[in-house]
Image (cartoon, rainbow, N blue to C red):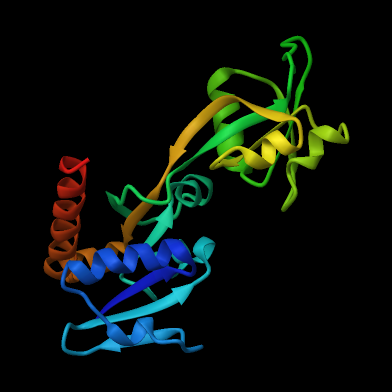
Length: 212
């Protein structure tokens, strides 16, 4: 069995469609049920739904052979896994946002609020900028409004929430998309299965790109 961890939600459903077209179908996964684990013995595949931020943990620890995780998760937590393929879906960006009209003063320490502390730390270290890191778990946009921080580092998709709070993107840190990842031992012992899946999905992506 090839064990595959899928992120719950729309992203997982889109990715499963790719896997299905690649010959790794599991029809019971689409049934309206509270089950979390689905098997298709004929195809030799077992899927399970997990929280998106947990996929990399399941893969790193070997509970899953492969999985789909956002590049933000891979950069933030740096799990010991192989990154096999950019699935070119779930696209957004990690960005620095600030109140409209904000001007950074290099002479003072920049107060940065984020839940992605590792990404933010590495980004500002690469710029040689002194920062005061403020770790928050939610409602990041409110931090600069209340004066808790000067800027925020967060995922931006449409930018609507920023605009509604009089914030704007001032720098893009890194583009984000869903990535296919593999457990190191699984890659060694199930190479043929995993490589077949990768090749079929890569062909799908190439075809989609050509038809644009």
